[in-house]
Length: 373
Image (tube, rainbow, N blue to C red; front, side, top):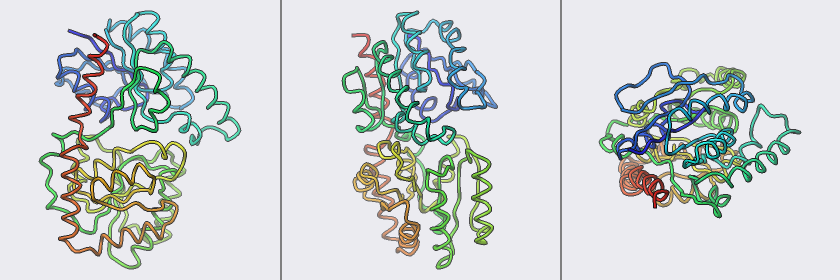
């Protein structure tokens, strides 16, 4: 049996993409899977995936120092394939390749040079040097890495000359296949994901204020704030506008709980601002909204817009224009139920037909098989 060691020092051990999609797909296909990841509050023991828990650094800059401590843990798994998910693990990937001579795969979630330019913990004057340093380290490391997995064509442009495969982070078919779209709260607007300034939260609050002045509606955030200072700013603004009874925060929830919120919500918001990384990446929230029969309102980036048009659902808006966001929300709140249901059905059908993990899981298995030929 082929042994696989999956590594992450950043993502939750039971992350949707890493654990529920990739690890489970490999395990079901007959691979023996071990996951090295930050220690969760509770360990799942029934999926036949061994978890080796590690401590997650509290400071982001310490992640780079912490990564080397997992090399021994990885080597002890005696894996045939090492599959890592974080850019700071590039040196670890290179060392694993040189020491073990086994297959090493780098799983790219974002356009990392662009992402560096949006990091709040980096001073502006240091961002360009850090970006250049990362690009040099990545270029050298890729000479040793066996293969690269990436999302979106725009991100993949950087890896064309390497052995690579595009695998999108589409939702699990079995998780949303039986989900009902007949229990919607017509006034409920949903935001899924981390709550940060670059994801357009300030603009969304301003837009919802406009909406609340014209219609009765509710806005629910499912996800956590990444900074206490920003949480205070947003909640102060909500109190200032008198919206405490209309805006709620559910906090972080497990991947399996997402469907509960999608089943109830009528409209889903993705108001990401046009920072470089957002312009080339595609958030899985768009596809989760479509899977849940939730009508998406998303930023008017070309690759977001292509998805909405293919799905025949939702609307693209300028994320920096609260009035435009509000107009889109009001449009769907005031739409007739027949029109809304048709849009929901079109989005759901596109999810069932093409925007689901089944095809992407097969790509993952084919990519693994390609190393054995």
